[in-house]
Image 1 (cartoon, one colour):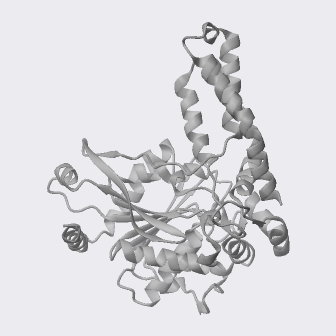
Image 2: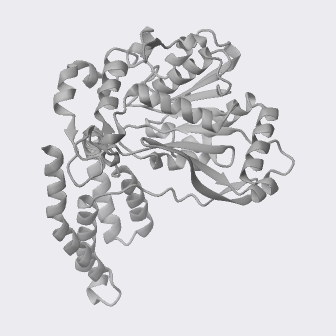
Image 3: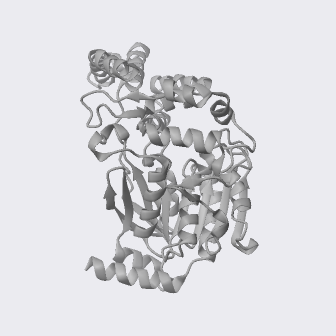
Length: 431
């Protein structure tokens, strides 16, 4: 019912939104003498703010067309190299000739698979993460599908399915690759690599990096962690799950809607979001185009949300946030016990933010305790001072202080010979 009401509200607001857009265009026009007055600027700003708050946000584009390596610009082509109903594997293919020119005689760069979170936002939320690593790695990312766009005949999607997908995509990227999981995918990614290690899978990655991940939510519990524990599991089933309405392809599918997750995040920092939109209004009135543009870019991304399948969401609540199955050693994957202690060849790095209010200090570090048979010289833990959750994978401190450490860590365990063999095989396949 709620989902249908939201869609009806959007439809009802459409005429007013169109009127606001027309107002904005009229009062921003150089041909309108009022556009240079305080009155005209206020009308244009109010219309722009109303339009941005009431419109529906679709999936953002990556917008990454080039990167810079050793002072030389290298073109980037964003392509899907593997696809299934619930996820696409996206490759940021750098132009081979330009890349060779930029690298010179340097060894081939490592392959990095970024496992994006499936927690309400599209993978493009990690645009800054991808952009920061493009000069250093051959970057791939998991691009999860909006559950409301997946028809019912495609079946269910659970936490076990998520683990299977991660394992398959690691295999697609190939042997000797490196995996970086941001926030939510930490536990299932660790589980996937544990299963690969126990099976002696030839595609087991050379390194794994977890950033702000809820490996063990019992440590430094945050507001979301406490909410998940205080509410009985049945409460989440009854209050957080809704049915996708027509005319979406996934009509009648039971989901955890993205707009519910978005409202939860915004309520955690409501005053900050209100202040941001008031500042946006002031920037528009004051002709501060650059600041207004940055605001639009951030909120165009932040307000673009996707739905999660009910099975995946409820599995995550119960198994990760309530039962703590992974740190307690009871995590099962399709009837098989997951044993992180079997990981002995994949180096481990954890990154946390000092002020993280989503995954508290120690939750990500717990991965080191679970990988009990991994040599100490293959482990690294880093806590970034002065940053919150999003600062762990985006922003100036991420670029200046976290990225160099991750790059050095991955290169330390990078197999140059294996990378050369993989690159040669890739070039032959491309020809």
